[in-house]
Image (cartoon, rainbow, N blue to C red):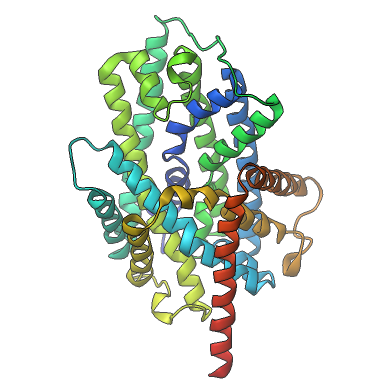
Length: 423
C-alpha cells in the first residue's frame, strides 16, 4: 500500500482516511433502532440508500471546495478563505471542543465496552487515545502507514463478513420480509428521523480535506472523497441487508448490538464473536483516523495566528497539535458526559458542513459552480438543513448545547482578535 507519493499524502492514504472516519460504531448499532422506528426493513434499507446519496453529494461538494482552496484545515480553512473569518474560527472551535474530541472520546469509550474481561473503567479508552496520539504525533509517515494497514485489514474483515454471510444465507431462509410494528406517528416523520440517525453514520466523508495541504494535489483529494464515500455506502447497504433482512425482525428490532445479534443468528456464536472483533477494529481505526485529521484544523488556525504558533503543523513536527487533540479527548473521557455531547454533535457538525458548502455560492468563491455541478451542493445544503430542523424539533435541548458552543467560540474569537490588535 502506498503511504504517499513524493512529499504528499497519496490517493490510497486519503481514501482509507475517509473509510476509517466513516465506518465506526454507527453502522453496527443504528439499524436496530431504525427498524423499531419504521417497522419495515425495506424502509430501513431505503433510508441507508438515501443517506448514502446525500453523503456522495457532500463528498462531491467538498471536492469542488478543495479544488478552489487546496489547503488543510477543513471547514475552518474554507470559511476563512472565503471571507468569513469569524464563522471559520467558530467552525474550528466546534471541531476542537466537540467535533473531533467528542467523536474520538465516544469511539474510544465504545471500544472499551466491546473489550472482553473486567478492565478499569475508562483506562482502556484513554490508552487507545494515547496510542493514536503516539502513532500520528511522532511521525507523519508512521502514522499514515499505521492508518493504511489498519484500514486495509478492516476492509478485508468486512469482506469476510459479507462473504461468510452470503454463503450462510444460501442455506437459510431470509426472515426480514416480516415487518414489525412501527412506533406511533406518521411514517414520513419516522423516515425523516431515521434518516437523521443514519446520516450521522455517514459523517466523515469529508475527512481527506483536512489534509489537503499535505496531499499530492487537490484532484487527488476530490477523487479520494468520492471513492471512500462510495465504497463505504456500498458496504453499508450490504451489511444492513444482513442486519435487517436476514434474521427475524423481532430479534433485532430496537437492539443496540444489532450487528452481533444478526451475526449470531446467521452463523452462530463463533461468527458473532468474529463480528464483535471487527467492530473493535473499526472503532480503533476511527480513533486513529480522527487523531490524524483533527490536528490539521488546529494547525491551520495556529498558522493564521488564532492559536499559539507552536501548534502549527509542519512536515516533521505534528506532535504539538496532536497532543492538544489528545488532551481534549482525554478530558471528555474522564470528566465529560458523552451521551449529552453526542446529542448536539450531529447538529453542530451539520451546520458547519452546510455553511462550508455554501461558500461555493457566496463570498470570495462565489460562482465556483455552474450548471449541473451546482445540483449536488444544493441538494446537500437543503437536506442537511432539513435534518437540522428535524433534530431541533425532536429535542430542542440539542440546540441549547449548540448555542453554548457557538457562544464560547464567538467570545474566544473576539478575545484573540482583540489581543492581536492590542499588540
